[in-house]
Image (cartoon, rainbow, N blue to C red; front, side):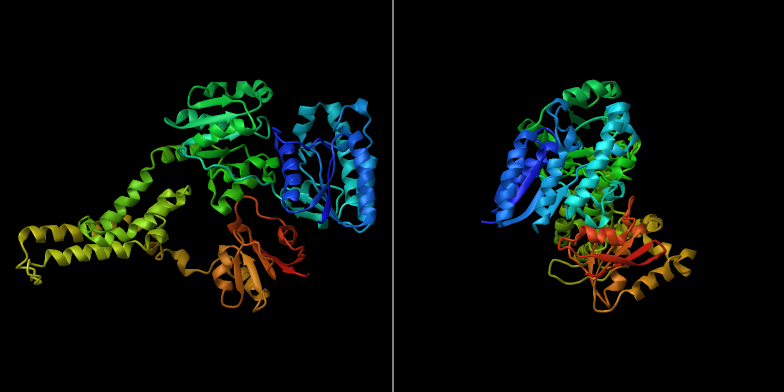
Amino acid sequence: MSAMVFYSPTVVKGGAGSGSGVRPYRMREAFGRLGYEVIDVSGRHRERHGAMARARERVDAGGVEFVYAEMASTPVALTEPITTRVDPRADFAFLRHCRSRGVPVGAFYRDVYWRFPGYLRQAGAAYGLWARAHYAWELRRLDAAVDVLFLPTMRMGEYVPRVDPAKFRELPPGAPVGAASEGEAADLFYVGALGDYYDLSECAAAVAETPGATLTMCVPPDQWRAHRAAYEPFLGGGVSVVHGRGEDLDPYYARAGAGVLAMRPVEYRAFAAPVKLFEYIGRSLPVLASQGTYVGDFVARTGTGWTLPYDREAIAGLLARLFSPQIKLITLGVLACTAGLIGLASPWMSLVLPTLAWRFLSAKEFYWDWANWHYNAILMPIAVGALLDVLTRLRTDREGKTLTWPDTPVLARGIAIIGVAVPLVLAVRTADDLPLLRTSEPIWRTGASRAAAAQQVIDTVEAGTTVKTDLGLLAYLVPKTTVYWVGTSSADTDYVIIDSYFWGGNPPRDAAAWATGQSETGAVYELVLDTGGYQVAKRVR
């Protein structure tokens, strides 16, 4: 059995109530399930001192494959009361010793909230400045002690000083898969903290204004006491507050229809990847997220919910549609009118049911809309065929003979006229909303503003290589390369192309750093082109 060292400057145990406590326990358990002998170096300083001595002997003897460290949310020196006199130098000396013996060392660095102004307000100026000095000291020691520094997102690396960025790798949170929720979409659930970085007031206001919508907020009692005033006006209007953790949350998850991460998009939220995002997904809950946040970009890219502006009107509009999705009825109406209404009598119309089912059962509102013509394009020929089927039957007598128009019964002719007139009227009525008419606009007779830049990108990529990119250039690269969509592929390709226009609110600032951080095999990329909103990164090893 291969051995690994698990390090954490905290007591690691099950039943923790926050992500900072849950993650170390789950990671340690996961290494054991993978078949490793876990050499545990965790707990209080006194416990770690003895555990580090024993682990050194195992490392020196050989057979230890790697060291994985889960750093605490606070500096090692401040993980215990000052009276215990924690000396963090011993911890980093241990990690450096392991590395000096040829054992790879990786550490997960949890957060950088301490670098933002709100930290001094929350912690107090004197303590906050003192703690910041410890954070800076710790990062210098980490740079010397580890081969890899794992981050929740690569975007967070822009805020991590004193560590070589080449050591950054992305290791987002995870969560176990639980029982799927059976709640209605407009029944929202939030679990977590409140405060400057967790401002849900606009979402709470939207729920209070939407009849039938509900929001259950599960927050720690001390957090609720501190921030109750901001949410009290919304209580009773569909908004309720509960307290609990662990298994206590199961009944609330079971009743929920969506998880809430619709928070104010402060700078901190641009890179923060909360554990609750993955807990929601593990419960099969779609996620309501804010634009301009890492979570919002993730949800939009993966199709795991809705991304909206942090605005009560926008959120209320979505909730109203979720609770009473009239847009689905409109889509059905357009389809029925395309069949001239009478086409509904044809058995051919049953062919549209599978497509309508997956669209309407999806949490992605985009799929419901009739105006997203490409989702309806495959259904329209079926609807027209159903109309023609009924028109043919109207002109057929009981013996199966096809009648001429004058010989067709008056009632049948009237029905046929209605069947043809309805889709014609619908075509005129919806022409302005569909793309065919828009081809007459001047923009279609002029070259695209980024056409030259796009062509330069295509020319930069060598034929016969593999590329990972977004939808904008995907089709254009297919003739000369093997192309993967950046939203779903984890493959290490020869090139990675980032199109900031298609990416969303917070595109990667450096395609090479992003691609290197995303690699699961240690691939390294360098930036070879940056033009017109496009970045091309080429794999160098």
